[in-house]
Image (cartoon, rainbow, N blue to C red; front, side, top):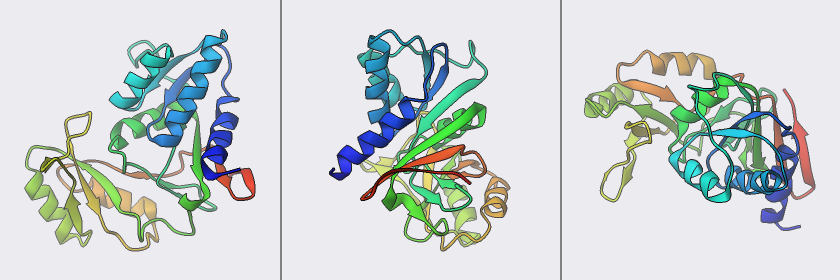
Length: 226
């Protein structure tokens, strides 16, 4: 099987966990969108579920495919969230997420889910977070140059994400600083330090949130647990 076929097989395994009556968190990114495609097939066959999307892009996709949507006003808790990740730390299953720009909404949904299932290909597995993959940090649009200065002073080497020559704006109306951080020895400590900086809204560190990870690789599809 080629890599795309393996990723689809991994997404199929995640979607197979969905049961009638569930409230679902619908993730963002290519693999998560594949899961939405597969979920739509089950909905068309009679599956009764509703979803809360992590991004406007996912919302548009789900509506186009006929997946019913809801919101936190109607459902404060989520039974199962299916999403991707930019890095998965072996052993802990801590994550770096947010390169797609939806990290705040993704974290709200992850924190509200009874189970968070991550679907990735094996290139996303690392011994330690950080390194070659930047850590996205969502920052308030108001005063963003000052926040960038604070991140720089803390040694995090931030770069303001741009789109079309202007600062990238998240669905929540914020900006993103992509921080070039070396190997993250203590993700919990770093997350707390970043949250202590005025102007930081959320970080791309997802710590202790993952139920298990479904990995597509050359040897097929496997499941990792912490």
